[in-house]
Image (cartoon, rainbow, N blue to C red; front, side, top):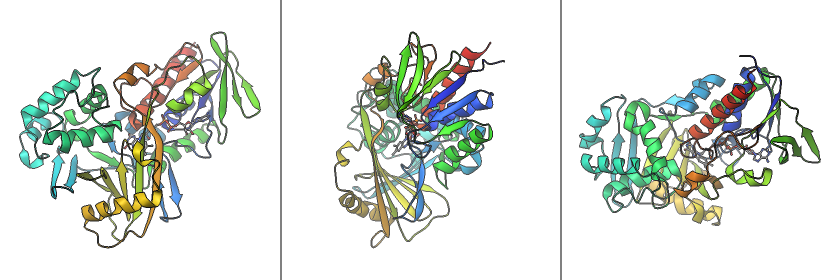
Length: 423
Ligand SMILES: Cc1cc2nc3c(=O)[nH]c(=O)nc-3n(C[C@H](O)[C@H](O)[C@H](O)COP(=O)(O)OP(=O)(O)OC[C@H]3O[C@@H](n4cnc5c(N)ncnc54)[C@H](O)[C@@H]3O)c2cc1C
């Protein structure tokens, strides 16, 4: 396929922007990436933290073996070797209140393995009965305009021990507020296909090493321009096109064959362009990273119920607390947060004494608020302007605001540009 000779301007070097830019560069197009920060990766970035004396991710991310878009992207950029696949979809849980523990062990295979799992009580959370589970799943499937809570029996043990932790992890929202449809979308791509599609995938050296640095290397090798610290302030509209891109005291006028992929987070869209919908609300995520004396060879994770902590992830000697839908935590003092949560970590991991160091990271706008109402405000890849395309976890991928959605949105935007530029 011969492509027109235009330049594609990708605004935002998060996973969505990188996914688009790499594909377009590989197809031989001229690509310029404009990123406001000093670094790429957006919400999925790694950095060296002096307090912890370690490289950490800004937020601990869970990937699953069913996240085909991210895994394909990692393959494309040569980052797949940086990802560690757990041998089975086994998720350990501790109940700090009831002093109980269990493992949700979906096994390692696909096909009918879910049926075997449903009838094997040793691999369940307490309170899971096959009929109740299947009826909840069926209700979620039909819950296009409903919340998760409206589709499940919220007072059940299953809701406390399984649906709420899953909903918080996947949708970054409480079941009362979060879209049943989006939870269903995640379930049908992973859990419901069996353990083979729900194995945790970790990045032992951080997400940057797996998903960001290799993409920058590919872009550099292909001659793409990547401009850091270049904040785009406005896209000027001329007729049915974006006519120019404005940034600090300068503007780049676009030629007839140029295109723009807007890959910024949902909350930044309105200031850049008029007439493009984006989900209005955001939910926060709180991560507290502690350095501890005990180290592990392989990354591991632990689900927590009956406390404030929702998940613990450990990589080497850094153990990280994740709390989703954490809006109420954002204005609290960081030291107080670290001291409040440490006793839960110590209880869950049987640690005596204090953490050696800690770092609290508040992401106020970690994802859009995945309410049923927000679905209608997720725009498609193509826009009302002929040369403007959208990418980002908030666009209408049919998936929750995740790395999977971001990677997919970038692929869809690149494909749309290439189709439109084909001669
Ligand atoms: C704490 C935390 C935990 C998470 N946990 C998970 C998880 O477990 N699993 C999962 O799959 N997902 C998780 N996510 C979500 C995941 O990180 C995002 O869905 C994904 O990174 C979004 O990528 P993106 O490219 O759409 O947006 P972003 O990563 O936000 O990238 C957008 C980029 O645009 C840049 N930008 C903004 N405005 C401008 C401008 N005017 N000019 C130029 N550049 C601009 C930004 O600096 C940024 O680099 C988590 C997110 C957070 C914050």
